[in-house]
Image (spheres, rainbow, N blue to C red):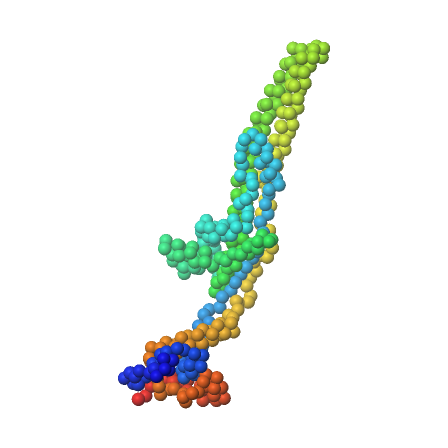
Length: 366
């Protein structure tokens, strides 16, 4: 017996176990002999996938997109002014990057505010309930609140366009009104956060400039008094080079203090205006709209993937049975029939093949 010849050992039912080197032809014969198992898996798994997809409830996705508008121009002037006096103000606007808003959308304070918001997720006449009520079916316990927070964070999906800085937010639920309300409320909470943050910053800027304006006014007054006192004591300073030089120095100091006072006064007026300004910081490019069409089920894609998965599982089962020694010899084909001929034979009689698949899946009779 040659070393490459298949060796068969018999078990209680005289089941062959294949050993030795494998070739493409031998692999084909193995698959041909066990093709019913491959057919069953290739039909069963896609069928289960389609049934599971059809049994799942439809989902509805609401989305919106926006960009942030920074106020760096006005902040830069005041920041430079503050730097002249050794004071650092948080005016760089770095918190308004797209990544900042992505993290803010899923932050705990924003989501908790959203959970407390009252929305309507049913007909127009349905009463409004909090988002937490809709997510937990009315459960108000601490564990339910934590579960609602985690669930809500999972519902919010974000995407950032690196080139344009556009931020997209999507929410997918089983209720179209609920998806729309969550996206709308999220944008409202972001705008509210921006307004409060900007007003807090503007208030700090106004307080700084107001304090600095008082100091600049006192410094200007002191410089003017020094110049006035000098002129009163030295009325003939024009005839003295030393006194004339001192007078010019005092005059330059008054001019410098006056210029500084004018700059701080201008910054103070801008800070006062910014403190009460109500201009939106977010520019909504695509506002949220009521969802009219449910999400696609993608049945064809899932069917193809299920078919491929079924074929893979069927092949794994075939080779596992073959090399484990559990091949049923009574289902073997005519010796020498290859995979190509076996498949051609099955395709020639599809109804007979289906009958064989159904019979082979049924209980075995002895």
